[in-house]
Image (cartoon, one colour):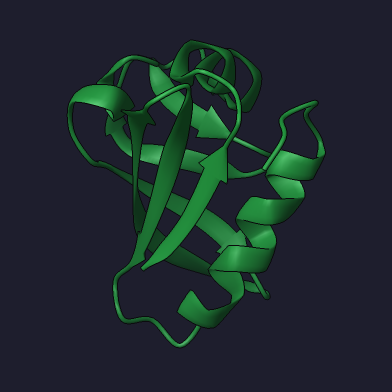
Length: 102
């Protein structure tokens, strides 16, 4: 499991890191998309499964955001793929595209 801890509240992280596409799937970064339709707030209530294109192939993983005091934590759980080791770098790149503070 990978854990990113943010200084910002979960509402700020949700607003800057996640979007809902026209098909009602949650998006993160360039190519990360929830497997099933989801709303932005769903990731605070339950783990949401995503699929993303990483290292020339698709990888499935789970994300969950939890409020922790004045900040929040994004947990990334791989599914045992040979590409799981690249998830931390991929998600960190998405975070770096925002003004969020780790």
